[in-house]
Structures are given as C-alpha cells and as structure tokens.
View 1: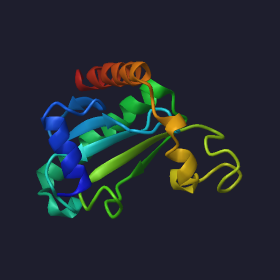
View 2: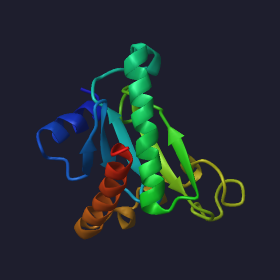
View 3: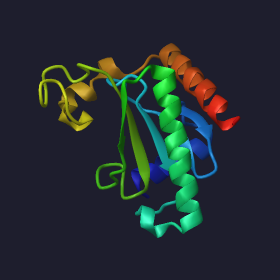
View 4: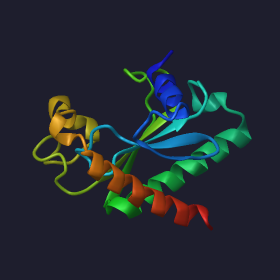
Amino acid sequence: MCGVCERIKETKDGKNPFLVKELETGYVVIGDYQHFRGYTLFLYKDHVVELFDLDKETREKHLYEMTLVAEAVKNAFGAEKMNYECLGNGEGGAHIHWHLFPRRAGDIENYGNNGKGPAWCYPSEKMYSDDNKPSKEELEDMKAKLLCELDKLLAY
C-alpha cells in the first residue's frame, strides 16, 4: 500500500488528526509540518497514478476542487502566492495528491534565489524539523480557519 493510501485509510478510520474536510474527489488535510504556515495537501480518494488516468468529468471535478482548496488556503493563511505541486514519485507513493504551499516573501530565508524559489529549495532538515510541527491547539486553529474558508467557497 502506498503512503497516500495509508493516510487515506487512516482518515477513513477516523484516525487522521490532520483531516479538515472530505470533498467529492479527495481529502483536505493540513500538512504534518508547517514551515510554510497553512501547507495543505489534497489527496485523491482512489489509488490513481496520473491525472490523465481519470475520465474527463472526474478530472475536471478534481482539478476544480483542488483550486477551491488552494483559494481557501490563500484566504485562511494570508498567502501572497500559492504554489501547487502534484508529484507522486517520492515517499508518499505514486498516487495523485497535491501539495499546496502558501508562500510569503522571505519564507525560505536566504536559500534558493535570494530567498525565492520552490518550497523544495528549503533544506529538508529545516522543513521537517520538529519545531515545524503544529501543537494540538495550533492544528485545531488551522483546521478551523481552513474549514471556514472552504465552506464559504463551497456555498457559492
């Protein structure tokens, strides 16, 4: 079972404290580490490797929902710019999932191009430092903010 499937099973079993909301095509979850405050993932519900493997209607719905999640993240956490990544060839497994990074000026300090560049320019030992794990209270606050913004967008 891939890492994303494991996280989805955990979510379905009610054991994922990072779950914000279930949408039609995926699960919205706050990232385990929060160097980029508001970092969120959108996990496609089924084990599918490529976007082009989805039928047209499902793909359109999934991409629409992903953009709603990104907009909610931007609104909830005050991003200056959103970064979107759908990788699937790392530790999480070959499974459609989106990394949604709310970005702000200087958020990768002096790494990359004068503090600018993709989130992955930031050293992994810093990004995945225990200092970047939200406390239980911080996590609940983040989830509530994101859920509020998601519900506003879904109401339209």
